[in-house]
Length: 264
Image 1 (tube, rainbow, N blue to C red):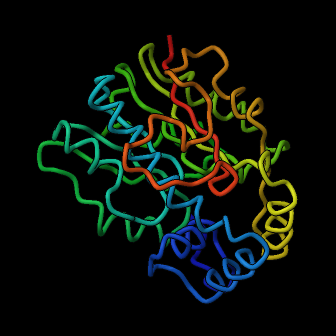
Image 2 (cartoon, rainbow, N blue to C red; image 1 turned 135 degrees about the horizontal axis):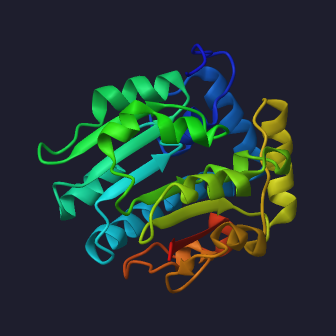
């Protein structure tokens, strides 16, 4: 279950919401974001491009890969278009289970994330640190058929898991419960292109109680071990099937790796 709402401490989902230009955040979140942006302005670019990556990958999964079930963990605050809006624009019967552990995220999700009548959405109050609880949640089991392919979506969440949290085991546990033909999609912040800038940002966030573990391209690629990567592989997200009209940015400005892969 989610912890009681604590608005006096910044929370990653609400800091992210502020960086996206949202309104569902509190002074502590805005202050933390402002301090981070002072030492690394690129922290504002990454969230916007991560949302664009989400839209491209979900559109690929629904339109080209034929996926009709999505498990989005670390949902964050609703920012349109959401996963179900993208997927259901292609097939109105698509089903999406959203998972988060922040009470304000869940409150807004239940109020604002309304499914197409032919499809379905569910909101699961669970923590990614405990993947077994996610998989066993009644709301998830009532929404998704885990005997049929599911797209596991982990957008910009795994960098909040340090090595001691064993994020590779967590991903393996989730994938292990999904059948052949399922997909893994993830994005992950990296400091490969600007180690000094992201070190400064990390120091600011840790003082606010938000810890991160930036990973290299090889470390991000390890999450896809044993899966069949979709072209172009694990790359800076700007390079993953970009739209022709995409904003001209550098990898350092975006600082995220991402990939899509199919479970054989």
